[in-house]
Image 1 (cartoon, helix red, strand yellow):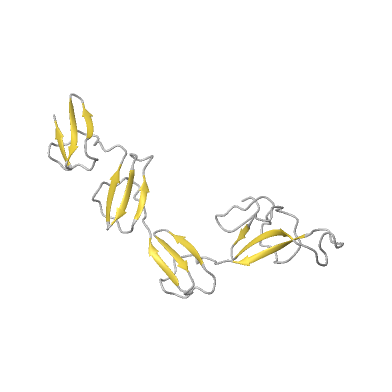
Image 2: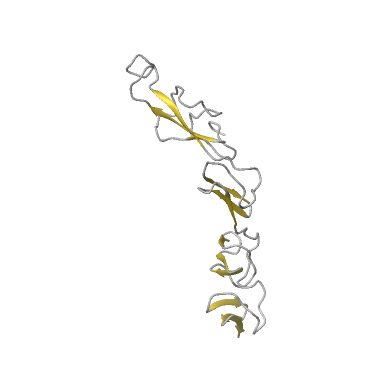
Length: 192
């Protein structure tokens, strides 16, 4: 991890491996807007104007750390409605997003966990969201009202479907099977 940082986070080059002390001298990163992110704080090495120890007043640096406290996400998803302290922020967990807002209580909502295998239109799902399957049959599936709707991608079954069986392709999806073609019309297969 270049320059240290919070778990799963890579900091910019020049960021210390551990969080610096607020209002202490620093030399890098030299861009006033570069943030160094740590568990519980976010710091920037900013240019200071005047004052004892600053550049132009006998000091060597002219820059110091400006750190602000940040929300530390619990290791596991908190209970919806539990107290979360005075800091605001959002924490993502598998299947759940939790936000600590102005009420100072956790507000957790279920998020869509995309199935490894592309679902078909009508399959059940539990949270609104979108799953992209560019490397798994192509297309996109949307979950709304506890049901997937899938569009795009390869909607042709590997084997020739039975005439009249249900299909999930878009209107006029056409699939070739040797000497015959099958079309998805009104969510049923028609083959010649």
